Amino acid sequence: MSEEYTEVVDDSWGDRFGNSVFAVILGLILFFGSFILLFWNEGRLNLSEVAKTAVEVSATQPNREAIGKFISTTGTITSNQALGDNLFLIPGSYSVVDRTVEMFSWSEEKRTEERKSMLDPIFRTSECRIKYYINTYWH
Image (cartoon, rainbow, N blue to C red; front, side, top):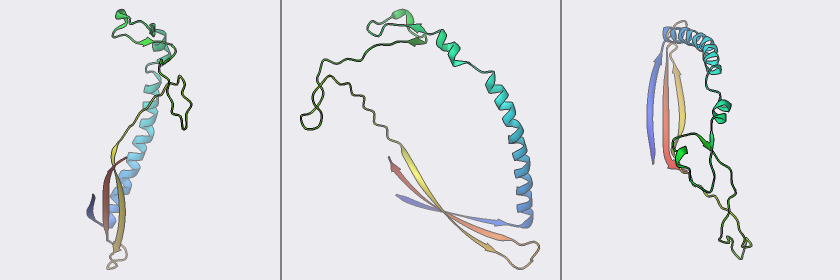
């Protein structure tokens, strides 16, 4: 399924200048704001400290006292069934973990066509026609 969306933008000299000033101010705010975020993130939770508080439980027996707590466990994965086929894999005591993940997404193609007005060489205006082609699919 494909959709088409067209956007027409008229830019004058003042619009472009205003957008440039706004971009500079926004860039400065983001630059200095990043230092604040870095400082704030350094004081956050240390995961190694959380791991020290984990309750160790047995992998073979359930522990009712550990419900709702952060736990850690170790163990061996075993199987009583022999997995395999006679053509590619010799039957043996293998463990198989299978996971299938699908995501619905879209791809977007963008085509731009720009027309400039040559009526006034100093305050040129331009018209930008942007076409978006959107396809959706599962992958």
